Amino acid sequence: MLNDQSSISEYLLYSRLQDTLMTLGTNALLKVNANLYSEKKNNQREYYRGEVQYISRSGKLSRKVTRKIEGVLLIENMKPFNGKKEVIAIRPGDLELMRIVLLPWFENILKEFNEIYSLQDGKLYITKEIPAMEIALGPAKIWFKPGIYSNTYTDEISPCMNLSINDPDNISKIPYDSVYAFMHIIRLFQIHQYVSTMIASFDQAPVGLNLYDITNSQILNSLDQYKYEEPEYIKKKRAEYKKGFFDTEIENRK
Image 1 (tube, helix red, strand yellow):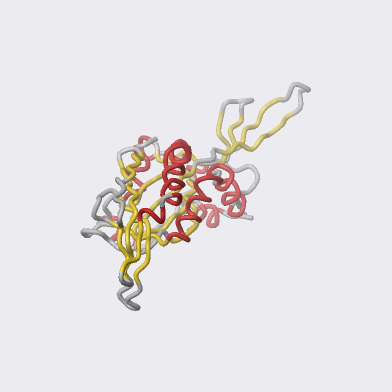
Image 2: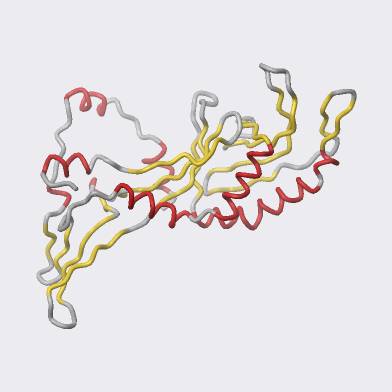
């Protein structure tokens, strides 16, 4: 529990929570991101948590806690491609689209597996060419296509699913056991439910913080009154700071 101004000020440094759900092949991760606040105009923040004070129907002074649950799934490069790490947001609507479109496509690939792949003279071939499945996620795109993975360390060759992130050549090769796990997440994952558990495990805000008093239309103990004094080296770094993905692409899709 936070109980002093210094602790509250440091609490406000946290902008998001992030869990890694799985590795998607050779160069991608699947993560889930929970937003703790969103940026508004004039550098104002809208925090996920607030309180409202009001007079109840019985005439008693009462309070309620309000929370704004926002989160996304992320597909993220582990290593840069052409000098850049791609990060793609999957929102609840995108996830539903993937359930409708991508899952049946995956299922057809598995049904036709022995027609797509064949082993000849000890070598693995793709004998039935399958067009790539393209999924548009806002301004971003991902592609899935059956492929072959060659392990440079063991010389082992195995079937895989090629995942391309925002560029057909930015490929992560996913083994089929991971494809099954990815299908399971697409089918069953509930973004808002999961994000709620993330926030619940983190929530340390003291009672009465960021309280809006309806009875006299004012905010009491607003988070905006707390400031965190940054060390000089942070201020220097901030001057060199360039906006990253989370401050541009994800917010632009709101």
